[in-house]
Length: 104
Image (cartoon, rainbow, N blue to C red; front, side):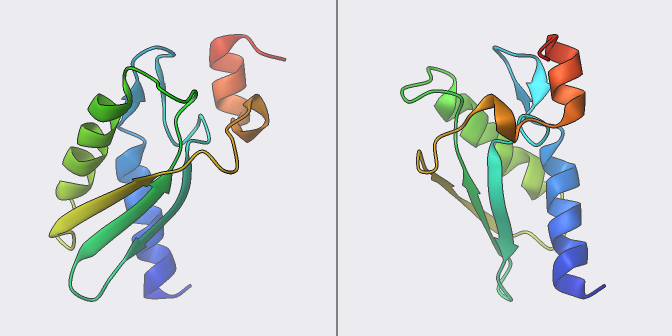
């Protein structure tokens, strides 16, 4: 396993602390985080989506993403790219999230 993968795993673990306030489940298990990367300069790039376009919690969630990643010593700055393509669907959710929300 290479360092990049270790770093991605650390970043994803940190993002599990970001809870979607409407659903009460973290953004990783909801499948909202599409990709994470860290440059050699310590800039974290997060590609993620929201459960809906115009989600009123969007800015708050993005702030929480920045805060969560700032906990990692390697991360100096975080750029969050919110995309709606591909659109989020329940299929993106982990089994844990589906059970937590009572979705079959």
